[in-house]
Length: 112
Image (cartoon, rainbow, N blue to C red; front, side):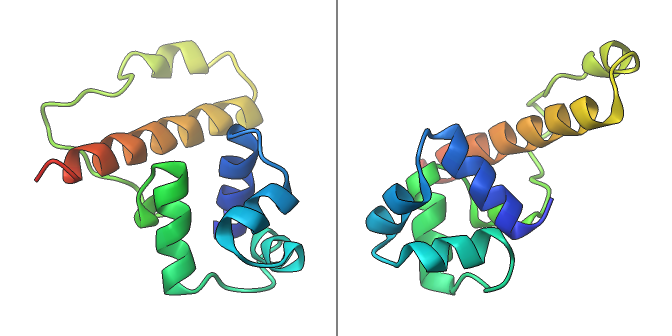
């Protein structure tokens, strides 16, 4: 998943339209469209704003896997259950897990 695809995913997951996200970010709708289609890179300030808005880490938006502390188990039992699903569904589930890990990491990094 690209950075733009992650932004679109987060926007839709939060029931937002492109105009709604543009307004919250104080940018034009065409800027949001350009981010989501990877025609334009997100600047550092906007990246931080997006991460704060969606309660995830900037690493998640950029596509870096979040490493959690070893005491946190995330759906270790799913592999057996996923084998009967098509590849696209498996990918969506793994992306959702990464999304939740990013939210967890963001929430727990703010406590430090």
